[in-house]
Length: 81
Image (tube, rainbow, N blue to C red; front, side, top):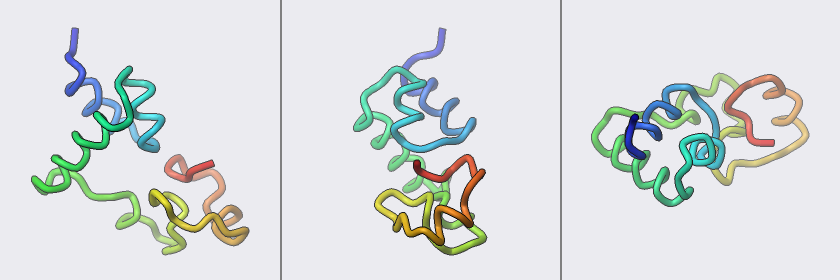
């Protein structure tokens, strides 16, 4: 059975928002955030914002949830609801 860090990494690879990743991995959000921060600092993880083709930031934590972003980003698995 995988430990909590490995479960978070597996869920990051599957994709999703930070709260969803933490929930599926069965860990607190702050723990998953620490793992993601470590991976980003190590150069092993990019933010979804850097991959967004729209540039509207609908998937970024704290990003704008404008009507334009909601329409353009509908269906994207990284979009926050």
